[in-house]
Amino acid sequence: MKNEIKNKRILITGGSSGLGRSLVSQFLANNARVVAIGRNSINQRFINPNYLSFSCNHASLDDIKNVIGLLKKEVTEFDILINNAGVLSPPKLQYTINGFEISYQVNFLSHVLFTRLLLKHGLFKSGLIVNVSSPIYTRGKLIADYAIGKSKYGMFQAYSNTKLYMALFSNKLAEEGISSFSFNPGTFSSGIYRLQKKWFHVLYKIAAPFMVSPDNVAKALYFIIKNGSWSNGDIVTKKGRIQHLNRFDTSQKLAFWQMIDDQIKDYLI
Image 1 (tube, rainbow, N blue to C red):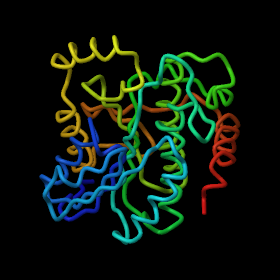
Image 2: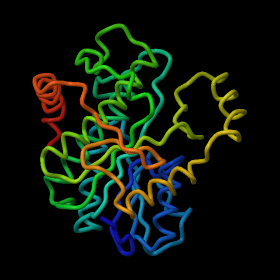
Image 3: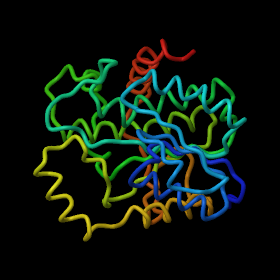
């Protein structure tokens, strides 16, 4: 089903850099009304009456809770939510102020809390939720202890897990009757490496000009949403290919989501 974008109210997380900023530009260029949240407020970068931004650090669950109050003052309801904020897992285990492994919280748990709060406060009643995943979601493992850093830490595995969890979140929302899909953007030039060592920054900047640009990825996601070329609860690549997630039984998923509910329950107010 095609989705008219003009005048739709779009909410984008991680909107101050990388893919998020490209998505902001793409939707504004097509006459949508866009609100972005990110580590840095970027109102000055877009002189556009259809644009608002708010500072919000996904490494703080209190920030997630507090930004909901700001959004309620500006917007009655959103039509499309794109959960995009993310970070590449650091080489050594790091915890947030809330006690979770940082990429687990930034890439996944904060998005679950943010989405649940939007639903609870009536800021999202119907429409579409897109959760940005990654090609390496296929390497992810549904391990509860890994989510909070209690088992042996590995950067690659930690990041893979978070992107699997984002795909699972779309599947969960679809089961609840909410239109949602996960977006597999492929490999592209991004700013999610900020927690890496300096040598990684240097190599990444050398490689970036030869990688797909975030603008091209944003354009691909825009057309997937506009053309309705997605399948509820599934994963869609930037080329529009549908990928199904059928790796876990019901008991595994129930235990996982019970853990998540326990982790965010104190902030669901």
